[in-house]
Image (cartoon, rainbow, N blue to C red; front, side):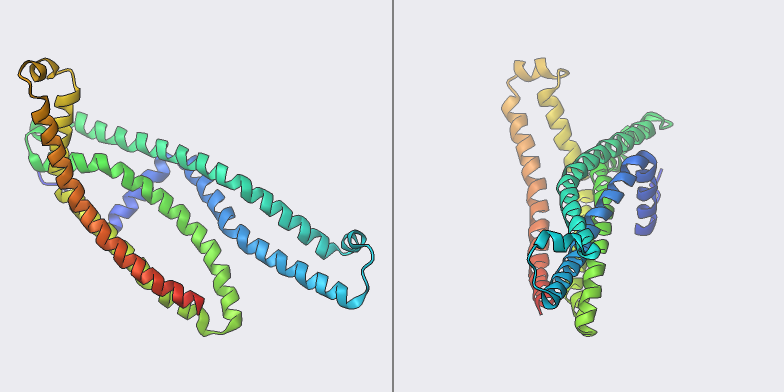
Length: 280
């Protein structure tokens, strides 16, 4: 039996479908909260501009003796102040609500994906699954893929937040000069590309190291499970298996750390370039 090869786009489609099926309510809530979180700063900025314009106009027209009465007599200024205060209060509570929604989404997705993995393994037509190292590696990758699906959910919501934060910034920058938005996009593109590139590279390393992960799990089961507890202590094999697990973990960690470090340096370097572009 050979595993089915699918493209990155097909994998994304399946992941999104699984995400929506597993946690439709939590996904909707988190998306809405992130849209509000992304749009709120731009709304506050717009209302601040209205307040400054109205106050400037009042100062030019009349001498203000009673500030409160002047504010109450100007509907635009009054509602702008109320809007800013309301958005500030909402912003304080959004962080807690986002944390709750994200935790709920994580637990829902984890349960759904693990349930599907268990269902596939339990309903496999024969025991060849447990005799084929390649298939066992795929099962191990499916287990670790739970975090990838969770990360996909957070990436989608953060992308929406970024869109509702970035688009107003682009619009504001366009009022300065037509080339400013192009400079912002150009300066931020390299770091986005590199981050995507190294994320794919890390996943490839995880695929190659699925065998080591299975060996680590086996060593952990021998050390902590009751199945081999008696033999382990009878023959004094604890240190041997502990050293074995430590060696496997060090091999896995060293390779992953090398890729992460290389990717982090590249992304940070281009992020500095992006920040310079935004500053200009």
